[in-house]
Image 1 (cartoon, rainbow over the protein chains, first blue to last red):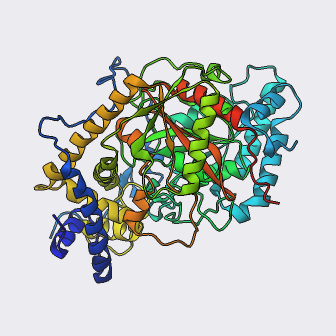
Image 2 (cartoon, chains in turn cyan, blue):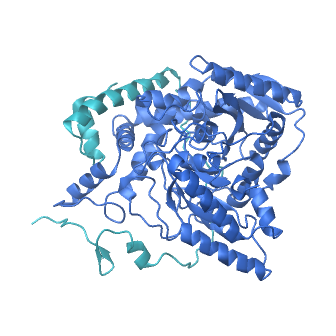
Image 3 (cartoon, rainbow over the protein chains, first blue to last red):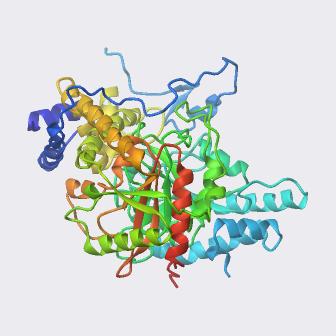
Length: 96
Length: 484
């Protein structure tokens, strides 16, 4: 499998990235080189193998549900670009 | 002896017995930093005033006769992807260039609780994606052993800061070798603990099933000392094991007679630098003289670790980095009329090329139609690689390999992404499998350090420390560059 120019544009859109024509040419080659390398693992027979998903030995760590201190609103807003009245300001989301 | 030349253990001793005050320690450390930092560029943010103030408070605490922590007076550097309340943390990305931490990472809270003094945050590849530290938004770091060469990466600043004697210990993060490879290139010791041994709370996530925080230090003793502090359960990270934390210092200076060391033939392949190979074979001979038993082991799926890693790591990264959208924190692109343009422009302007490359690969392998062929396939091969290691560890206690196929490359070297990824072939498996691995200086090729890697069974950092400590003794004294 390899990536076409259209597929790169589609994946970039899904990733919320915009690529210039120059970048598309550069990434096209690099991404296909990487994918060609990755495809090597198709040699491995995995028909009867379960995917390895959880790396931690304990699946759940339970604790009592209790009230604890959490981070204050002022701190949460500290790194927001623009905020007003405890809310983060963004461009208009709902159309006319 | 100058303070900056000392290990963490020595600094702590001299502070506790009154030979040095914390203020003297911090002043001496900053004198050293002022002298060598223009050549090395390990740090992206220094806590000069804060560190000095904390040192004064620590001296007062000592004067009052209060109980002092296990790292009392020890200067520590942390990687720029770890949070320290009120300090900058940017992951060396433009997208976080103005980010200020609003809480302490658990490892940072533990260091502070034990009276260590945080000196600053260190340079790294953007979001820990790289093996040169050259993808940092801020600057390039030099290798203290050769200023024209890379320190390795992604924890290149953490490794260089220790190798340049700017700090005795630092913390790094390791997703595919990012502690061990720079430790090898910079001639110091670096440990990637077992997945789930150290809390990741307050570490900016790259690939959540692979990331682990670990220490870098001048010797194995300081690694043990630091692990005693940073390891252990955490209410804020449910993936951390609740297993008891052993006293790692008890495994220093032990006899390793009868220790079974596995040598996987798949790690000694074509393309490996002949000088590196020679250093590693000489190290194996040294282990023999210590009474260790050398056993051939088979890790037949080794060559599939790289393809597997370069599906899983980008997939998890594309998901983790979705949070950087210019809304809640970080850089925001100006003049975006609608919310979708705000996201896209922010990310396009805020991320560097390597990060974009990995987000695109990751999004692709997770996208409908390719999920089974790539992501699920990678998870299956990951299990097969783990089974290779499970079988090998039935026969041996540790597995010995090189850390990297080459010594540090030139800062000016231009490599393709695949060529760079191939530099990680010996370190990726430990992350995929979740086992601990340590890099210890073994020798040099010309003037450049070469590290050997020891991989261990789950939660047996103890055995790695034991073997590495014994090796360190027989290897003999290891000099760091004076940089005068």
